[in-house]
Structures are given as structure tokens and as C-alpha cells.
Length: 329
Ligand code: ATP
Image (cartoon, rainbow, N blue to C red; front, side, top):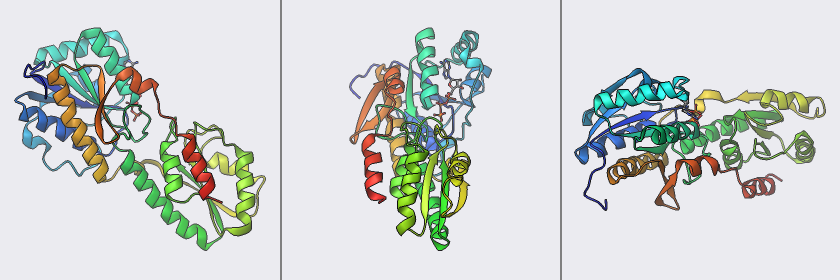
């Protein structure tokens, strides 16, 4: 740390939005770093909702023992209607003041940072962010906490589907998470050798899919199509329905992976990302940072303004789609 002046003395930490594996590792890093630097630290339960309802309690060093390997979040997470309203945020500020909390670390996705940004400006509370979302849709970091675990889980499940699909000449439509982001679908698609991937960012429609199926039918014993849940053509069931009407070569099956993608022990990459950015977030607050997110870019710590992290959404890039198309011939 460059400066010896401390801009905060008691920080709060919360997890918000959808939970992501690795959030616990981030909480642990925040709590331990705060204690290491002689700060007080409190946990806010159930995200911004808990901030508004004053669900806050001090966290000691040992309160975060034995959680680095656990999925989910010990602070629980929530979506909060109250925090969208100025009165809810004013109540949140009163609660922080009542406890002497003068800085906040928020762990979440784009919505969480949007809320943090509004709150920091409106009430002058220093807030820094740590990425906690399986969607990998924030700019200013190569990966978000939870993405590596979620994609590895999905990939392993797709591997199992391939085993059974290739034993029966089957066409599988596998739906993975991603309402607005195709990152999980695209990465899993390449990593599991899928034949086709449908994501919200790219318009790969049914016609293109049929072309691939016609080509694959001549030489492959199984075909796997990965569908991000937010694709314009619909989820996996809807895509399967549209295809079935036009393509009868394969026996078709649909598998929706669902919430298993969120759970499980975080991978080493997610634990490391959470630990590094957790330490950085607290040290950033001590140095006087606010309105920024800690990420890792090309192996190095990087700070990005909340507005840029949100608006610079990383669409799945065209090159990944090109690679998938080459490798699935
Ligand atoms: P995920 O990527 O997993 O969905 P997220 O952080 O994007 O996570 P959201 O549900 O979009 O999750 O946002 C979490 C919470 O942030 C919302 O429930 C709300 O309380 C707060 N929030 C989001 N946008 C705003 C905003 N414009 N003003 C105030 N609060 C907001």
C-alpha cells in the first residue's frame, strides 16, 4: 500500500445478486485483510436488503474459518426492491452511521455495482466492488468469481451427456445458465466439443443450426447443441421443438443443467481470484478508493470504475465462435 493514511476504520461487506462459487473465499479475504490492517469489519446479511433492514453483525477472524472451499455465501444473498428507492438507500446510510461503518465492499454482478454506484454518489459512502457472478459479463477483469467453477461444472456434465448421446445416435440440446450472457455456453461449448452454440450476443438461428445438423448427420454418432437460457430462439426446449419439426435424423433429448451450475466447491482459479481481489478491495478502501471494482487483467490487479465495468460488458467474442465452428466440423 502506498499511503499510510487510512480512509476507513470500520468496513462492511455484503454479497448481492445471484450467488456464485468463490463468494465465501472473497468474504474470508475481506475479513482477514481488514483485521490484518487493524480495521473493524462487519458482515451485512442478504445483500442490500440486509443493509436496509440493518441485518449487520461484526465478523471476527475465526468467523470466516473453513469457508474458502465452500460454494454459496455465508452472508446469504438477495435481490432488494427497497434499495432501488431513495428512501431505502437513506435508511441503509442511517444503519451504517449507527454502527460507525465508513466503507463498504460489495461482492456481486452488474446490478450490484449499479446499486453501489448510486449509493456511493448519493451518500458519499466509499464503496469498492469485487466481482461475484457466474456470468463473466463485466469489463475490467479477465474472469469474474464463480465463472471458472460454473463452466467446469457444466463442462463435466456435458461430458457425461456426450457419453450417453454417442451410445444412441442422439441429438442433445443442453441449456446452460446465461440470461444475457453467453459466456458459459460459449466456453463450455468449446471445452466439451459441442457441435453448435446459441448465445444471446450472436444471432445464430435455427437455419444455421439445421445446416450443421445436416452436415453432422453424415459423419457423427452424436450431436450436442448448447443453448444459453437467454437465447433469442428460446431455451433448449423451445429450440428442440423448432428443430424437431424440420430434422428427424436423430433421436432428440433436452437437458437443462439449471442450478447445479451455481453450487459446488470453487475451483483453485476462483479461490485465487477471490483472495487476490478481496485483499485489494480492503487495501483500496484504506487508500481512499471508491466507485471502483477490483479485477485481474493479464495476471495483474486492475481497478475499473463501476460505470465502465457495467457498460463495457464483454460480449462473447467473435473469435470464440469462429474457433467453435472450425473445431466442430
Ligand atoms: P447477477 O449477475 O448474478 O444477476 P447482479 O449483481 O447483477 O448479480 P441484480 O439482481 O441485478 O444482481 O442486482 C442486485 C441488487 O442490486 C438489486 O436487487 C438491487 O437491490 C441493487 N440494484 C441494482 N440496480 C440498482 C440501481 N439502479 N439502483 C439501486 N440499486 C440497484
